[in-house]
Image (cartoon, rainbow, N blue to C red; front, side):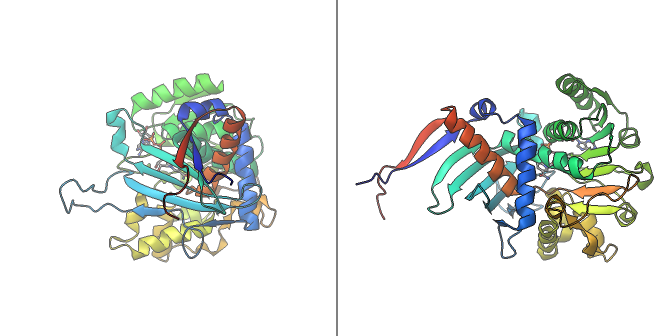
Length: 374
Ligand SMILES: NC(=O)c1ccc[n+]([C@@H]2O[C@H](COP(=O)([O-])OP(=O)(O)OC[C@H]3O[C@@H](n4cnc5c(N)ncnc54)[C@H](O)[C@@H]3O)[C@@H](O)[C@H]2O)c1
């Protein structure tokens, strides 16, 4: 009789580095391919409208019991689930906890797990350290956006927030737009910002300077990448935006409504941002409750207040598929919102899993040899 044992491959961050998680050109290709599947509709995410970012534990403002976590900057637990079709045909989940305070303990802001399941049987065939999968797939999205939406010959990048995610964003933007030759980074912590500039300049081989203000990083930029975590959002004045620039919101920033209404807004998947809006409307504290997770939070507030009409917002998948037009002119300013989707973790995770199997990496774990009850 055939064995009914269920086994899973455990892959550590070290295994994933050997499997190629830092291969950004490949990651950008995979993420672009996922946008094509999104445009075609061959995917499902959570919730009845099939487009939820994830299911979040919203922590209360005050502890109700000793030890109960309270809300704070970038503090949340999130289960992000999806089915992805095409050549992938898998289900899976990214599950993580995030807390900006983690840095004080020498930990990254968030600690993530990626699980890949057989779509037919539910067997979790891989459980993977999710941090590097998530960081590189997150960066690859502005990379794909740069390929489709940046003006040709883009030279300068404005980096707002010198953390993990912007390392991946700048790497991917440089991969997708090789004309990039300089970057200006602003971080609220000058020490962190200067160190980031030095390290990333050495890693990417381009000039990167610490900018003394958000304005100094934004004004020269053809592409802006925003990814901060903390108690306050960076403030960007509309007039600082250079004609033709692409602003990528991987994290949110504080901009006036005119920055959106006078320019073009494109999302990774607008239906997902509508789901963020619905969550905010449902939450007792209102839309502010989704500010810890939605990089579209300020725009959603304008929409809820009736100050912005979102009906013209296109999604990148439709542009990659050729169903909608991307950039229309060299002077057009494009605001690109990317909230993060589990389909990207699944595709990049599966690509790395295949590489790990080929390279015989990881540790096999037996769930059961023969199920005790069935
Ligand atoms: N959209 C997505 O797919 C996605 C995925 C992962 C993370 N994120 C978001 O990206 C953001 C960054 O994540 P990370 O892991 O790089 O965080 P991180 O904590 O490693 O780095 C964030 C940096 O931002 C700086 N900062 C804080 N407030 C600032 C401000 N007002 N102006 C300038 N700099 C400021 C901090 O000093 C820190 O260096 C988070 O908000 C996170 O939720 C988005």
